[in-house]
Length: 379
Image 1: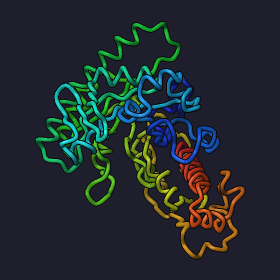
Image 2 (image 1 turned 120 degrees about the vertical axis):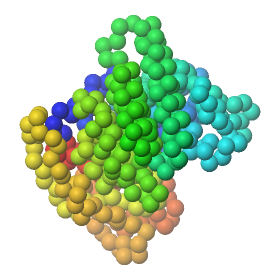
Image 3 (image 1 turned 90 degrees about the vertical axis):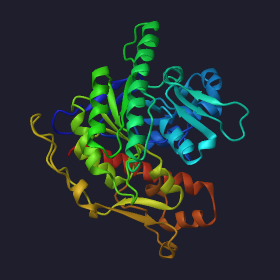
């Protein structure tokens, strides 16, 4: 990226080149594919979820299997999400299943005999024990449309929890032997649609000090549109020297827009979920770089990727028009799926409910996302 944005980060399990997209491997796997498929698609890193992993397969099992990297067969960097968003989704929609308190999150999952408690300290302990390269602080997630009092409470808790996460992270790292490349700790900026609250949260987190930051809260409004103003504000609040993660930003058009703002990393289940449902991603034209690296003193240059949506379209493989279509999903794509299989064959696999379809479709969408990141690195 142009400007003073970091171009990469050295992590315990490799170098992360920015910008980059992290597919959701929630419980240690990207659905329908394995680690070899993911790496072959050009993906650099994965995101896994602490809240789900502590339930399945469970912390003792992960540790017995050698940590997340050994368990999943993935050798690259792993970012572990704290579980704050999952708690938001579960508890705010079904309050009887848990509670958010000043001390953390308590959940009573259906079908489980005991409650799960996730404090800021436990959140950090679990992520470090799993071998994460990037540890996310526990945060109190909200929707952008939640009322002011909910956002106020979220910011207060998020700041307090981040301070406790910082203390626990430093204590645990001090107990370890000298690490050549220690894991990083990211904090999450909350505040909903309030400029004042976003500013308050960002300033408090910067004062505590972290290796990177994330945009917190649901990144879409009630109509499904990217909350561009708040994303842009958060990037302006966090100095450009720090990586900024767009949690839950996964639509290609939204990633392009956020990358131009200066966001470095993104995670979402959307591209792989779309693939399994027969919605494949394609470029409609060749996209040349939009200006090179430029001067370090110049702000990022507007990119056609962000403002001209004609470069992207969906291909719905279930359409009848593809029954006898011998072409690949995308002529210029170099993924396994496009090199070896036709649209007609993929449609046949989908209609026959063959598991091979989900794998081949997922490989293609992952490769699309990796190619998109390669293009955005020249913005």
